[in-house]
Amino acid sequence: MHKVEHRVIYGDTDAGQVVYYANYLRWFESGRREIFRGLEIDYNALDKRGIITPVVEAHCNYFHPARYDDVVVIETRISDVKEKSIKFDYKIFRKEDRKLLATGHTINVFVDKKKMKSMKIPDDLRKNIKIG
Image (tube, rainbow, N blue to C red):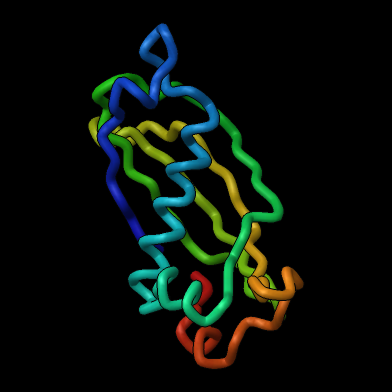
């Protein structure tokens, strides 16, 4: 599991200073980026190899609102690895009181950028990917 913090900026919120629902998906992306970084998988290096990892499924359950200036903690873990895809699970908490704000998951598929077709996860990357 990996944790990353984010302070809610005004641009994350709606007119009522409550975080706009789609921003939770952006926070999921931050979690994915950082868990990959921790596994020594670099998105820039993947791109140079002609590999992208688009989201093909996203789900989010909202429990409590985050508000302007809250610090939220995004916890990310890899829950499943298949031949061509990875499933990431997320929990978002308010740091101050550890109140669970949202949970969700995404499934990302490895894609050959040139052919725009799914591909097996390369062996050199697969050895770094850990469930848990």
